[in-house]
Length: 134
Image (tube, rainbow, N blue to C red; front, side, top):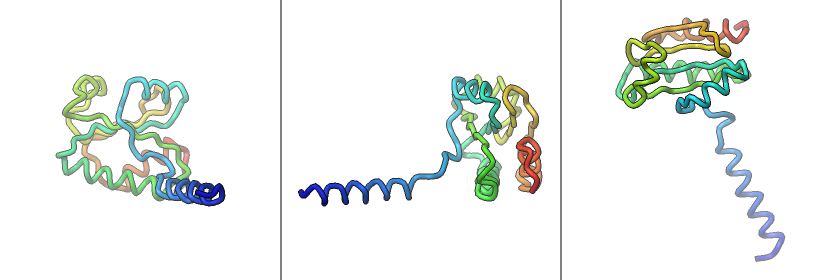
């Protein structure tokens, strides 16, 4: 292969990867290390106690995805706690059930909600914590 052809192919592959990569990961799996690192950075963190089989959780995911689509400049870190496999953290966050959402700014918990799927309520809580005026 010619050097020019190799460079063009490399540029094409890199462009395809960039175009298909999300601007940021919408949700990360919860780990203690990641949570503590975000707290140390005084980041805005949404802890999502989630179960894949939960219809309310699915509705919340849609609301949270819509939030990020409508407010792309808000640096919200979504950490998903698996309700079935991470019982230690379900208990730690005192989640009475799946579909529990907790919002933190650093180490301070500033919002707690169970089964909230109304976009206006979720948007209002995150906007308030982020200092965003809709």
